[in-house]
Amino acid sequence: MRGKIVIGVSNSLAAGALWGLVFLAPLVLKDFSPLQLAAARYLAYGLVAVLLLLSHWRTVWRQMTGAEWRALVWLSMLGNILYYVLLATAVQWAGGASTALIIGLLPLVVTLVGARDSGALRFKKLAPPLLLSLFGVALVGIDGVLAEAGAQAGNVALRIAGLLCACGALVSWSAYSIGNSRWLLRRPDISSHDWSLLTGIVTGALALLLVLPAFWVAPVHASPAWLRFWSVNVGVAVLASVVGNAFWNRASRLLPLTLMGQMIVFETLFALLYGFLWEQRMPSGLEVVAIICLVSGVLWCASLHRSHDAHAMQHDKAVING
Image 1 (cartoon, rainbow, N blue to C red):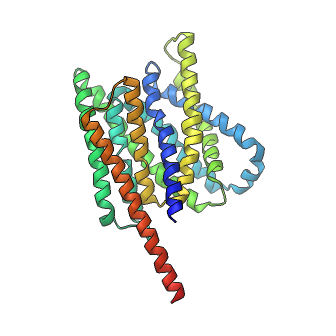
Image 2 (tube, rainbow, N blue to C red):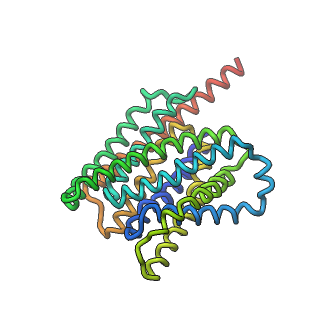
Image 3 (spheres, rainbow, N blue to C red):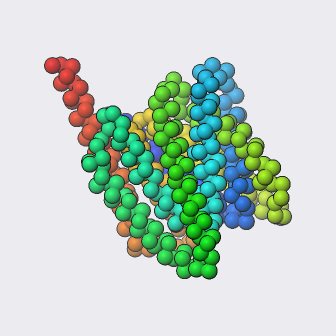
């Protein structure tokens, strides 16, 4: 059981490292709209997913029913298209640190929902590491919000709109994370990788609906700008959507939902790291303390789950032997 937890956390770490790139792309491509970013990224994601599924498409097709396809439609909309449009808008309007702060509340939301599952750790035990993680996120937000407020003091309305978009992204991704974990547990016969690719195909189909509104009336860009646009979006599609989602789906089958909620913190940490690299600066003292709090909260929660699972196994053995 301990090895299962370690492998699950490792997969979550890899997913977070790749998902953190999502926060960087809107900054690198700030001259393009969030709708254009979403359309390009998910068209590329869908195309790559089709290519990777071609070799065993018939096998996967026979495993699917109407219920799975309907679930993939709303999961793709919530966790990919809607989430990314809202997140990219928030990054461009409110700044990366403020957006990372709000998205960093995902562990709290998902863990609170997961604590209602049968056999899950009680919220009373989860509260200390959750509060520590939340405190770390708050510190990041205080530092980032104060800095960005000074830089954008003349555009308060745009900033407020960006923060509201970040809140919308939080709700959207929370619903996706919970729903996706449920479906992965419901259909263990479908591999995590294939489920991710199926999500990509459905998302790519939905992205086709964005092409006309995204590119019909678009600002004029030089050829190098378009080359950068497609390079970044294809890179994010492959690394974050294909590879990152595969790591996350693998972790979702190894870890309980309460612990999966904590693992989302890795995305926030890497988003901050990439932001520091993009800005070519070291984190402030407050940011260092915040990162320590976030990591400590995750490790604390993982330790609680290892103890809980070990106790549960001993109890089951005692019942069987008794």
